[in-house]
Amino acid sequence: MNIGIILGVIAMGLSWIVKKRFQSTMDKLSRIPTRSGMSGKEIAESMLGEYGIADVQILSTRGMLTDHYNPAKRTVNLSEVVYAERSIAAAAVSAHECGHAVQHATSYSFLRFRSGLVPVLNIANRFAPFVLMGGIVLIEFSALPLTIGVGLLAASTLFSLITLPVEFDASRRALAWLDDTGIMQGEEYEQAKKGLRWAAMTYVVAALTSLATLLYYVSILMSRRN
Image (cartoon, rainbow, N blue to C red; front, side):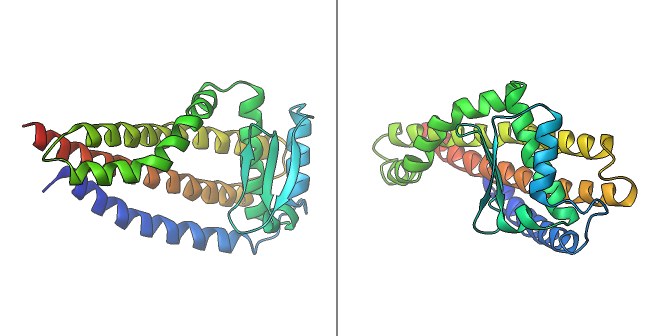
């Protein structure tokens, strides 16, 4: 069986498991108030202040799991729940997103590399599905369209792989700050660590899925050339 298909099936199974564990863990932690009583917004303000980052705005955004750091606009965007809640989940997620702001302020190499790939990723996400589909249809006539599609997909996969150290490092910075400041310690700290670990695993599964898809199309291309 094609290795891409095998990895794809494994990735699908892992994705379901990780998604369920991540959701159940964060749901549980969102119901546990922090001893500090700080909201996600207050956590973000404190962490950015500790690092002397004064040019980053903290914004509330609609939706669930919409939390992200925007390096172009210099904003920490927290979902409404994370922004206002005073739970372990809110504190962990808020500190994680601020971890990205710290990466930006300190010119973290993997974040710079990932940011540089964004324009390429936008092109790949826009055109890859159509080019790959056309490549499959035209494979008997020419391998060029599929080769181009594989190249676009490779760029997307590279972005997914580069995202892994960025996300793991942001969580490491967040947890170190929460511990060093004493905002979270003991069992509370371990619970926040668990939540961020499962969040990071969603990126691992996404990278594996992207890699499996790439290998699938590469195998088709190689069989055509053989």
